Image (tube, rainbow, N blue to C red; front, side):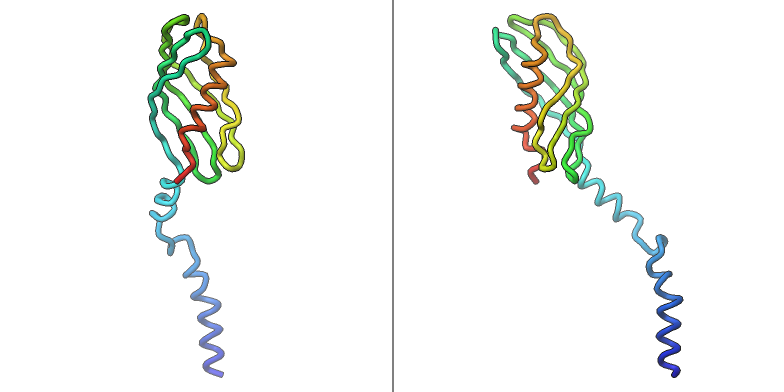
Length: 133
């Protein structure tokens, strides 16, 4: 009978203490989240039709799980048949495996075909293999 009472005591009073939020390591979730949230900077060049050369420096904020791009921002410098420099933002849609399906940027520079620019950046982001660990 004493054994049953001691087991019942432990089950009723000790289990909630062991499962309480205070008993968890406060750093474990933060460290785990840090491994799932990434921010990286990339530089590169694209050549669009008509001899429009695009140099870019971008910062990408993205999550590993689920794979998604939260934001892209940076600077583009155009040369050749299109000219100008602009700081820009871009949104990106990804599928559940992390493939970038499309991007939408706010770049507005003379001579730049925005649809072609967005399509080229979609390919560029996929080529970075952000979600391959």
